[in-house]
Length: 453
Image 1: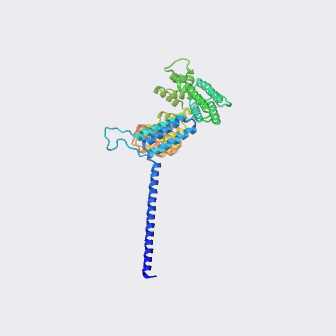
Image 2 (image 1 turned 90 degrees about the vertical axis):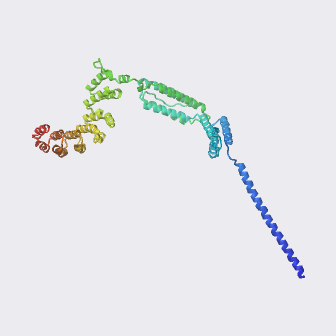
Image 3 (image 1 turned 60 degrees about the vertical axis):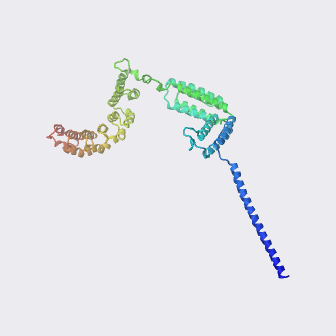
């Protein structure tokens, strides 16, 4: 082959390669265009599948849920509606809704807040949903448990207890007939017994496993019965329904009055009960009679009586910083009072004097140091009370601080109290500490010293 022929052949091959390359590039471009078109198509498809939520679309869904709610007949139907409302609530929270009175609107032009209206619509549907649920046996049991609490926690009169028996008996009969059961019931006027019967009734309802759909009529009957039960309990006579005098009369407080010597009769009866050492009746009057006049007379009676039966109620009052109660505890002399009142020994002078005196009357050497610490306080009367209290306690450990007070205190009345206390302790050491003041400048101290001679 000639050189010209070879060159022609090479040129032809070169042109074929160029055309092939151009063909490949064209195919690549077409493929890329198709891919881009597919991506755009998918994006458009996604946009079509998840359109942006609007106030109108959410309202439409709520209206649909409202229609489903109206058609719901069972608890399962209501569950479906509740799921719908939950979905709508999520969409509403995520939705980008227009705000009222946005920029560019006239200031005097009011624009409704679409979110607020939709939230109110949603809330109303949830309320309607809850109204359509039930009735449930759990509601019956809850009502019975409330009745049990009332029966147990209330003080009833004799008439009220009789009324409770009648009401509860009727309720139990209704429950047994409604659920087709029969359980043993023993009714007495005792509140605990009545509460136990109601508890057995609630257990029977629970064991019946009533279905809110299939047994709706039975549950309604039971709920009506619990309403009647509660109404009957509310109408039964409570102790608090009586007047104070009626309460006292029923407790026998006035039974001691054969005639009216003093007015008011409560005071006359109080004096008789005090003479008979009946702390229970004095405490009854104290708790029942809400007058300062009778309260004062009751507390004075308890202080004069000094009966240990009054310890617990006085401890309760002492915990509220009641000085009268603290004085009574001192007269009773019970060690039980120490822990309740010792914390007030450093209180204001008025309270401190009351507490210190009471501690002295109780006479426990457990508080010797606490009382002795009061010999150096600023208030003169408190120091004097502390000295005399130590004398009543009689603990020989108080001799030294009392002797120092007798020697160094600037108040003659406090020194005289210390001398009196040393005489009360009465040991030779204590008496020796007093005798040397027989010619003291203060007559009240000298008088105490002469007693020790």
